[in-house]
Length: 431
DNA sequence: TCTGGGGTCCTAGGACCC
DNA sequence: TCTGGGGTCCTAGGACCC
Image (cartoon, rainbow, N blue to C red; front, side, top):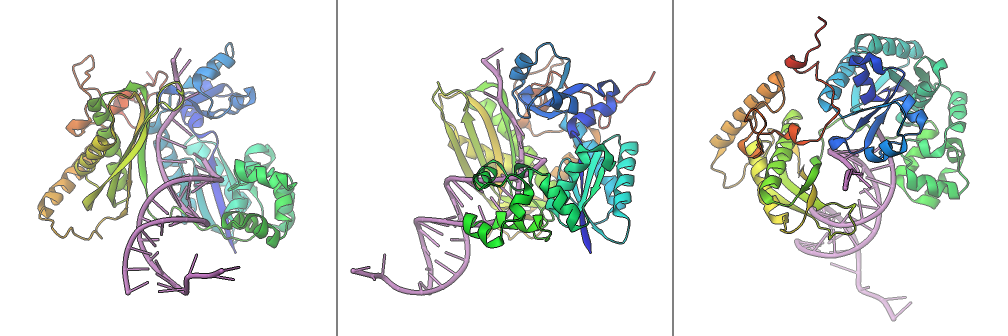
């Protein structure tokens, strides 16, 4: 019989920071979004104080003035590296795995071994080798495994691994689980379910299949109902490549001029091209959106999105940047203060299976672009991201050394930690 | 003054085709 | 009173996830 396990990093970003800052253990710590905008991760101590996820940083500072809280800017280079180490350990213990998000990984297990012990040992191993605390849930399907991992996180008696392997355990767990915390049931559905007197996962699971069907006429909710009742019906995602890739940011300050937007959009486009190449795919459509500050209802708002179709699907930074620039020209309207922009690439297919543009004459050029991109990727991977960039990615503004400012430097990150795992210059020195 | 950045799936409805 | 009947593809919007 097949089992699913989920390995979930506890307070992932905070835990990554604590590996290199042991002084932050047992203290209230939050990690902020880009431009130090919102709280995106909290230590248990910060949660206990009542700091909510998504809370704007300035509000937190007002509301929790006088509390001893450490706030850190997000350092995605570090989090990406640390979680990759976690995954490499998981892979050794469970060859059949798929990554669900930056901090979660599903594995498929069979019943032959002692699954509870397996989970406890994996937890110990990840803690010892990477320093990351994880919670592990194991059950017959993914919805129940997620629920189990929450129990593992909440009750220390489980020793970081909760296994649901019988109907009695399943029903007990369901009865203790609020309906709004079930995987796949968000704010809207839980409000509607509560109108029908459903408070726990068990209340929902015990309704008849036809009642759920008639009341909601919704196949997604129906699948969740089946999983709560022990069937394995939610399909495995993330086994194939992504169908859309987006890179977008809010700006530290408003931007009204086209050249500065061009530079930002070039950087977003370049990131999208990198992501395409990493999963060995190409895109055929490049879209750009820009918008004014949606929180300022006293100002006139503008939001728009334009797409450009490529003659030949591509993952080349130069090609994607060019297309993004022409899309930007189309969405841009003078006279607005822009707060955010983004590039979205779609029409994604595996690289290699590209049907040629009927009128293409530039396959030799494509070949050269490909070699150029590979060389840039290699350098940026070995030496550090943004070591080599396309000219249009460089900001007009220069730093103290006379060098052009880079994308990373354009973000406001006043409380950022070092990158001891990916930058030679920031490696930890003991003496 | 300061408010994140990614993704997925499903459905309904319209355009278009034969 | 009573619209032909299939199809496919695309898009927008709504729900969800982390």
